[in-house]
Length: 167
Image 1 (cartoon, one colour):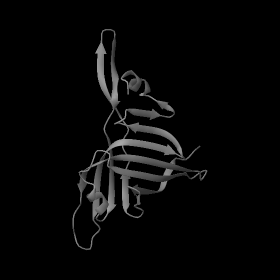
Image 2 (spheres, one colour):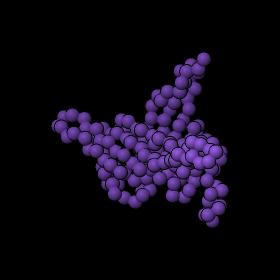
Image 3 (cartoon, helix red, strand yellow):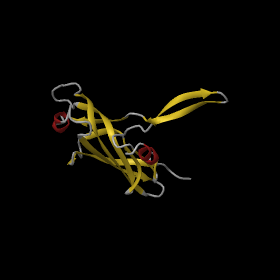
Image 4 (cartoon, one colour):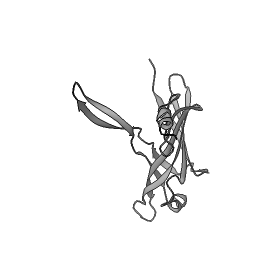
């Protein structure tokens, strides 16, 4: 029997600034493919891989976040964020350090309800152009949509595509 790895704590770094104690919730980007239905003579139906789907991160903060507001409307990869999480198994007490590095641009900032004396939750949605996930310092996923890199567990799945188009 094994118990799951549970997120025990996390931190967010934003353009190099430590946001400890400010980020309440962080929804990591959902990794997904754009698949298209295909059916032809003698084949199908199957789903054809058309590339990586849009990557978005959603994050919630307690109170006004000046740094985030200052970056709204900037360049496509103008925001650098890093999520650092400690995942622990309770049966072995083993801890995995999971680190997500992302670059992108804020798509939406929801400042929440303003009410004196109450905590305001600011919700942010960020369109991601670069994503790298490492576990205990080992890269397991790297997706760079602008430079056509799709690296999964030691294999760059788009290397031959880049070669074929002279990139």
